[in-house]
Image 1 (cartoon, rainbow, N blue to C red):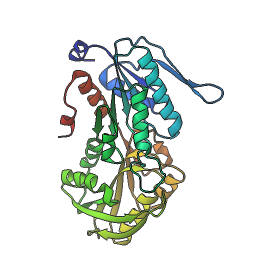
Image 2 (cartoon, rainbow, N blue to C red; image 1 turned 60 degrees about the horizontal axis):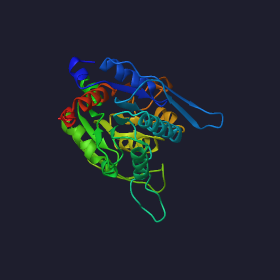
Image 3 (cartoon, rainbow, N blue to C red; image 1 turned 60 degrees about the vertical axis):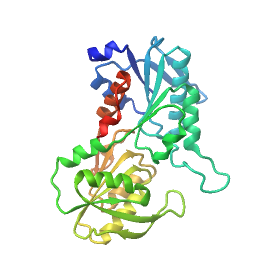
Length: 317
């Protein structure tokens, strides 16, 4: 911890069981130890949390993505924050690199839940004073919170990895209309053209490609998305642009959920490389195509700036 940070008072970083490796990386960068907490389960499956350090008057951060098993990790986060609040922590910040339940962000049909809002309410009620997250599935989820939320981007980590390599005749591909803004930001920073996929989703986790807007023939194509779940959409888009003459296909996503047979789909697809971040734990050994870049430096800088009362938006200018 720098002398300037010490002047602002102490802060402590805790981790649940979702991604302790990322929490340790953040602590290493900030030069602070990972604070101790016992997060376990009772015999019946209930979550048991015991904070093992004095946190009275402290600035506390809980690093816990709500990745699979989603419900277990979400409950760990909520119970840890409740424990910190009851232990008189001065301020509690939920560091949620991957925000689960985000896909239900509106009411597309009668009698369906808006779980993105429900989870925001739960975090607030559990004691969060602020939330730090990365690449929300939909930007409007920021408005679901009645407490401050810092919406970070994994883009710098991915760009650093890509810019270190030489590619020619390149284009950025948006896998659907909803991802155009994200793809456009990558295209601008990489000085590449933009191709948009007209995709329809008849059922959850299923997609159909109707049109490819733009030219991919003989080009190196970069597909950028916020997450890869079952990889159905990603591999379908990759096959579609391959059929249209794409020379090389590289995909990147902030969150590698990789449910069901996602890794097998990726291995069978024309995707040559899949770049993922460590917002959630990913076993890269499952496929030679998977490459992992870390967002620890982004999160550690956000925590530092938050503790110091400095601007976080400056990180992405």
